[in-house]
View 1 (tube, rainbow, N blue to C red):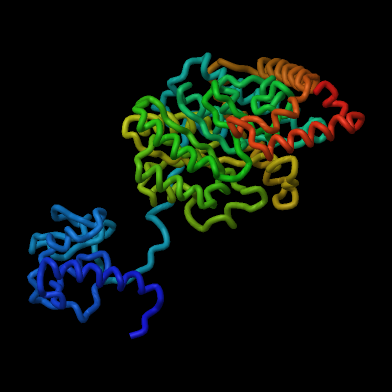
View 2 (tube, one colour):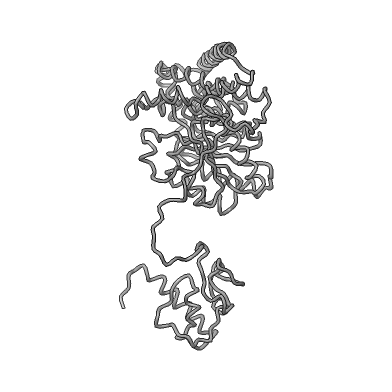
Length: 478
């Protein structure tokens, strides 16, 4: 009989199995029926008979190791116990005679919140276990990021930077999560987590050096602006291609687990748009099956550049995907710094204790353009942005909470913003005054010994610069 080509391998494998089985029993054409039902594939009907002497244990020895079974369980394919001759797939919970499609999990995911839009703690029994010094430091980091964004964005518009991305509206996701981590924790960012680096100790000067791409830049001037990185702060350098950090983070967490570094976790930040990439699913699946101590932190800010979430997915956000991979998952109010902080504290505690992954989805809003290459007014109304800025601003909520505690006031706010503005402008001017990295760095840090083709390219570039040095005054000293 002529079969579809896709059956070819399966049929060949069945015949090999039966040929091997003939060494155990002469009844080659009589295979015990329950055995065929417990295989991960059906045997041809012409080989089925109820009079075979072949036991499941005999056939078990002929199977690949991943299909073998030494006991009886609904998670196994083969079983010798006659009472357990009905094998069951491990993902079958219960059977039903009623047919029905299922298009959603029970009720929508609940969003964890501690503080309302006016900076008030919703549940009086909740105690924010943070000292005044730490709370003020968190807020000042949010302010520093906000002022940095406003100045560097304008600097790009003036032609002083080639590119920039602001973090408006998402400051609480950065600082709330960063404050819950330890210095040894390893960070994989996307490109909108500058506040995490600031809180861990990255300076304004280091940020300006990177954006200007001078000789002191942490990436030696070879990356786009805002692609920060710091070995000292355990923050992997950001990469432009979307979602590549996700499988990297899962692998790093697996390495940490193998090395036995019990009190260390990996944190991987990404946006809702990155969750539409295949790397997202591969990373979560690896982390779940290998039990990696990694926290996947999704900033669901409503947009993947110009694509709103209504056009990205039909499911209940990103959180339900974590549950689908059997990963402990929580959704929190991303504009509530204390909800984010608590979620990350609990996530880290779980990841360390159980050596297993966690998914955190922080519901926030991108208050600025995607980047300086984007004009968000083309796909959303200004009223939408203004509404979030006025009524659900993470900076305002945190500031009001601090004022309620007597730890901050309007005068301190004005003074600190002025100080930060001067500090950023000073750092930017200093960065612009520094020399550019030498051209030779273009060819470093890839090979231990430079191959011939790169050596040739370096010589060609050097010769070109020397012949046309009047066109490249910035490289005169090289």
